[in-house]
Length: 94
Image (cartoon, rainbow, N blue to C red; front, top):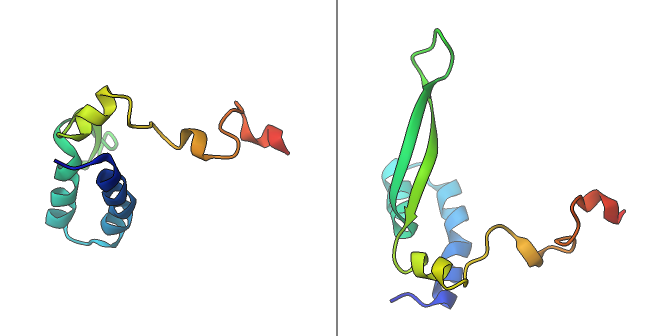
């Protein structure tokens, strides 16, 4: 089982791996590490376009990441790691 520390190390490298990858199968493999399921919704890009805009409407985290959330060991967003986390509008610090 992946420890929380190993998860942080993996998560730190994930963004760079996804940015540098041009392979959809590689991106899919990386994303499957974290998520077990997605629910997506497609909407037409415009009335005349056949292209669709896809959005994620629901997701399920894979184990052990779901347990990190349940145990409160997972932060949403940057939170207290920013200098101005307690400000409603960071520009007020100026």
